[in-house]
Structure formats: structure tokens, C-alpha cells
Image 1 (cartoon, helix red, strand yellow):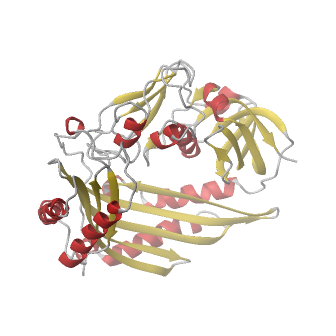
Image 2 (tube, one colour):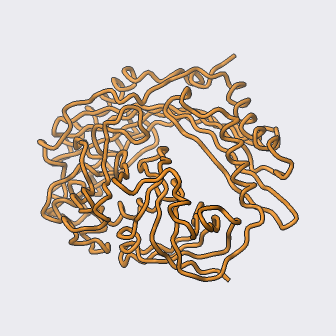
Image 3 (cartoon, rainbow, N blue to C red):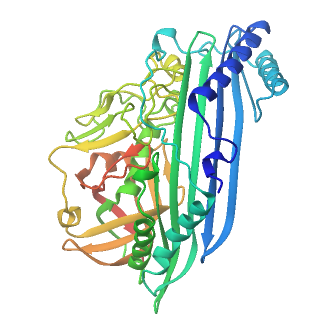
Length: 453
């Protein structure tokens, strides 16, 4: 019985990195031969399989195997970038030539170039992201079916399924530049999800759940994921709008991570140097209550977004982004840093394990802490303006009275300014959403406008 990880032979990080290093050396030599002052190359090799099962039958079964590179060159402060989906020598050679040609016709930019050498990573600890495991294809299929079946069997009101899925992938990548930097990354990923439709006399509702880990051993059992999705679907039955009012709002942990993501966007270099953020020129000022901190731990072993260098090769480090409510640093790559007259913070490509913490306002029962208000479990639409900080999105969740859920709510809109929302963060739960770059518990906001019927 063939295994998923050996469909195209298993990836072995040390072997793959040797191959990628050899290609990187060739690329950088060609960059120099074409008269470019500097260059960087990012290479990757990835493979895996994903299965989607619906109503007990296989709907899709997909294998993927992908190798490619992107190269960036600098010629007289002009930048050219090109990429290719193959690593054959002719494809690589043509890719580098295209990047060099693009640089010839691109306007010079005094802020462009590689990061400063002293900022590049020199230490590469094992972050525990590689957990390769042979899995027979029959077992991959069986797991996708088991995830779906767990929810379908949970309650007769679950009347349909949008499918259960299971996927496995493994990848190795290498970043190298003409200043001598060479850094490899390798990780495995296992994920499963399912989505259901529930029905009662008042109508139909849908919801979903998923789990994702670097190690399959740490992945929730199929029964847990399937039943969680079913419970969430059933809880939404009987949803109805509520009257328009101003009230406290709790963002559930998975929704709260997106809310903090808007803050991340507002303090990120591209928006700042374009003056396209409501938090421009707010460094060292208060942006959250003094009880709140945002702490980044990029070297956290086994975490979802751990990395010892950013997308440019700059070393990441543990740091406070928000310290006791005060904005301690912007999130900058080298280009944004130069534009703003600052240094890179090692955030080219985003944050790595950003953790929301607070002292004195955490609660194991945030509903009781709120009393009366709205629990939001889903937001929709694109009504977030990072330039002005205006926030207005469609939402669904639950009406809460005296700390107890009364009924499900839908067809509502929640609105406020992001600046007010962050400053009016008055409570955190003890639940943690840790499946992505941002780790946050549920968040209680003092007041928002809720538009309903």
C-alpha cells in the first residue's frame, strides 16, 4: 500500500536543501554575470495530498508536487523580480534573465536593495515544525470520511454536508542572497475540516470547524472536529435579527484573531509609508488599555507561525509589539524601514506567533462578565477601512442576557471605529485560538453599534 508521503518519494530536508543550495549558487552567479549589483532567490519544493468526502463518497482526491523559485535583482537601485514554476536549468536561467531585463526598465528607487548584512539571521535553531509521517492513501480517505461522519451522526437535524476534508503536505524552502545569506525552512502540515447544514421548523443554517497542526499526533481526533462543527451548526438554528441598539460585544477567539489582524495591518510598513493607516505617527502612544500587551514569539517551538528569519532573511526575535497599551514598534521590512527613516523590525512577510495578553481583565466566563450584549461568532463582508479605521461588517452570533445565551442572531451589522474598539477592550477570555499567526482569546469590547431590524 503506497503512502502519501512517498508518492513522489519523501522529501528529506537535508537532501532537498543541498539541491536548492546548488541552484541558488548558480542563480546568484548569473545575477552577478548580468551586471546586477545584488540579488536574492527563494526556492521551494513541496508535495502532499488532499481528500474531500461528501455524504460518505470521495468527491475530490488531489496530489500535488510543486517546485519553483522567485528571484529579485537590483541594478543601479532599480528592482526586477521574476518567478518560474520549474527548476530545470533552462527555466532557471530564463527566469534570472527576465528579472534582470525588468530591472533595466524599472525606475530607480533609493530605498530598494537587500537588507543590511548585520540584520541577517546567523542562527537557525530547530523549531520543531517537521513531523513527517507515512500515511496510506486509504487512511487519508478514511480520515476525511470519519470527520464528516462524526457530524452527520451527531444529530438528526444535521440534514446535509458540504464535505469533510483531510490534507497532508510537506515543504522545504531556501532563501539566499548575494551578501552570503542562506537559510532553509522545512515544515509539515496536517489539516482537517467539515461543514454542515442543519434544519428545523424555522429554517436552515450552516457552520463549520477545522483543525491544523504541524504534527498529525497533535491534530484533534476526527470525532472532535466533526462534532464541533455539528454543534456550531445546531446552535445557529432559530437565528433571527435583533433590534438596532448600542451594546457590548464579545468576539469569539477565532473571530478576534481577525480583529487583531486589522491592527497588524494598520502598523505594517506598506500602509504606514503610504499614509494609508489610521495609526500613522502613533509610535510610543497608547493604542490599547494599559492592561493589554501584544507579545511576539517567533522562536516558539512547534507553533503555527514560528520562523527564525523573515521573508528577507532578517533575524526574528521575541519582542513586545504593544507594551502595557503603548505601541512599541511598527512592523517593517527593510524597504519600509528605509522609507520611514527607521530600521527593519524583521517583519517582511508578516508577524510570527503574535500573542494577545492582558493582566487583570481575563475571565473564564466572559459571557457573565459582559452580562447583556452580543456574542459574535462570524463576520462577513469587506467593511474595514485601514485608512480611516472605520469598521462595519455583517455578523452572526448570539444574543446574551444576564450572562446566558438567549438565541442565535443573524442578518445584523456591527459597527464602530477600530481605534475605539481597541481602546475599549475591557475583557479577555481564557480560550485561545492558536491555529494561525495571531493567537488570541475571546475579546470583550465595551460598546458597538449593532444594526438589526
